[in-house]
Image (cartoon, rainbow, N blue to C red; front, side):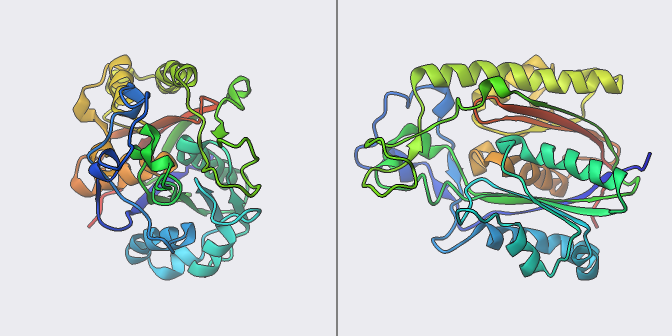
Length: 339
C-alpha cells in the first residue's frame, strides 16, 4: 500500500491578542452558565478583522508552506480539502476561492461541512484515502475559524458565557505520498444518534436566515451542556484508545497528544483517561482559546516550531465535534524537522 505522510503544517493567527476583559468587563456580562466548567474563560484569543475572510486566512496560513516547499510544489497539489467553521457566504464554500488565490488547479476539491472541531482528522483520512486509491500524490488540507471576531462579538451575544471562549485562526496541512512522517492509522466515528443536538437560538424564534432583530447564538442550556460534557469526556479517550490498540501500543506510549480544546476540563479529563502527563498533551487554549477545527493544526504547528515535537515521536491528533456527532483520532510518526 502507498505510504502517505503528514509532511508539514503551518498556521496563521489574526490580529493582536484580545484579553478576557473584552468579554468579562462588558456591560451586562451576566449568564447563569458563566461558572460552568465548559465556559471558564481563557486569558487571550485572536479575532479576525472586520473584512477578513476564511480565504484570506488560508492564503496567509499557506505562505510558510510555500516558503519551505516552493510555490510550484504547492500550486501543483492534486487535492484541496477545506473546512470553514463559519462560511463567509451562503451556498458557496471557501475552496474554490482558496484555489483561485493560490493558483491551484486540483483534481479533487472538497469543502468539508461536517466533523467540526475534529475536521482536521476527518480531512486527513479523506486525503489518505484519495492518495492511496487514485493517481493523486499531494493534498492541502485547511481549517479556517472566524466565528470569534464576528459572531461572538455581537452586542447581545458578547454578554453570554459562550462568547469569551472561542478564538479565530487557521491551520493547514500538507499531505504527500512519501514515507517522511507516515500516517500510521486513523480512527473515525460518525454518531448519527447525536445529530441535531447542536442547535442555534434566537429570541424571536425566526430561522437564522430570516430578517429580524434578535442575534443568533448557540442554544446552550444546563441540560445540553451536561450532555456535551459527558459525551466529550467519553468519546475522545475511546477513539484514541482504539487507535492505539490497532497500532499495538499503549496510550501511555504516545509521545505527543494534540486534541481540539473546548475548555480546560476536557483537556484534563482526556489526558487523565489516557494516562498521559500534561507535558505530553499539548494545547494553546490559554493563548488562543477554543479554535474549533483549527486548534489541532495550529497547536501542532506551534509545537513543531518550539521543538516540543521531536524526530521519531508518536504524535496522535484527536477530538470530537459539535454535541458528539463525530469523533476521530490519527497517529503520525513524526520525522518532519524544519530548518
